[in-house]
Image (cartoon, rainbow, N blue to C red; front, side, top):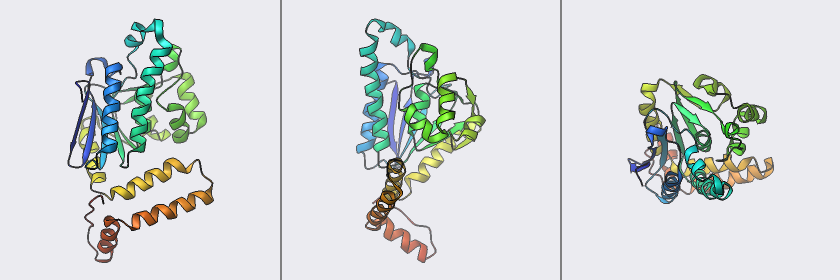
Length: 261
């Protein structure tokens, strides 16, 4: 995709790697545009049955490149609208993607880095991860969907505490809040993330897509409407090759071999 965003698909897993390690992968304009291109490519790629998002070097993603903002301070409002719009299209593509998305995070997970992690379906953290929403330090409000995702993950009061006070929390505190699904030793993060991503890539991809959509859209529905949506989703799953395989494997007491169809 670019030097700052590495992208590949192998074994059913699409991997996006933030690759500006000398600046803790802080997002500049070129990197944000490359991220959008990668996310939209994943959304279209039927061979990618799971997604892994990670960072190269000592941190996951330390938010936006403040130096880039300073260089454009005279036209800051227009510059922010342009680049935040690109970032938001990238994250919307990840949310729409009909496949599960795993974020593997370590070191600095700051600002937009936390927003990107929150947009994923699952998050696995190294025990050296440090999380902070530092927008207030530069006199800004959050972006990247943080004001939408975080209240849904940790609750409104906890989300506001993270946003207004801007205090850093460690991996164990993030786990206790529900910000991440699990914490592993830093040396084990890569292997654990790849194991989870490969497991998801071997699963019933279309059923996972229906599950992801139901959860993401459920908060906007009444219970009655959600029950109807569940029936319709289950019926669509019942028309797939993977459903027939899953039912047969269960009856025959063997492990299913899902094809993502």
